[in-house]
Image 1: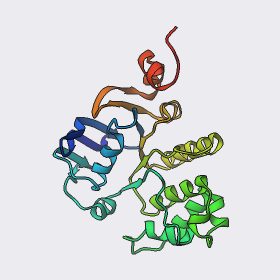
Image 2: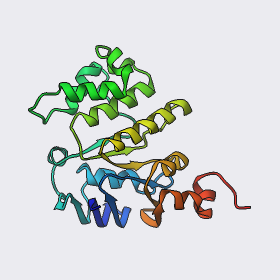
Image 3: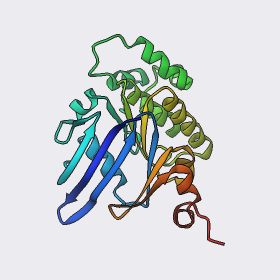
Image 4: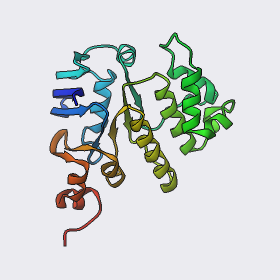
Length: 238
């Protein structure tokens, strides 16, 4: 299969700090790809560069064969890239339904089928469709953030720390949903500190350290790697 997303020599600087240092990676169409690494490794900045939120210093970002570097975030969304941001970032004073409709703000077609699809993934959102998003639990807000991203009908959905601050049972549910979304044909790029869950779910993964990719391989290969086990999975070498 072909690559949906190709990043070539991506570099992002904030003043004198190099947050992302000549990163190159591929996201194959129809796959789950994960970025793992410690805080400050450059994972979130990489995703924000793809979504147009931060401006790279150099490099190329090709989506579906087109260079999207320099495009505004709304134009990138229009091409089929959405992001579930770290911290969920729902609109607290709007209802669940209004938040979902905001995810589809660029669309001119009928939303009914996609709304029902989101509700089928997250029945709790349907039950709370008229509830203010700010009154939802952390897990429910994460469901809403994922649902909002899906309402744009993306080809690629990027998720920035989807398990952050959630109870273990909710985390398992979120990862089940990630697999379900992927099974429906949506490519997933996942930034996740929970390396254990991320590598089990991913087809392929990259390890970032201080802005650089230091290791890559299938999710299974990285999960079995002794260095990855010790650094990110909490398992000591025997």
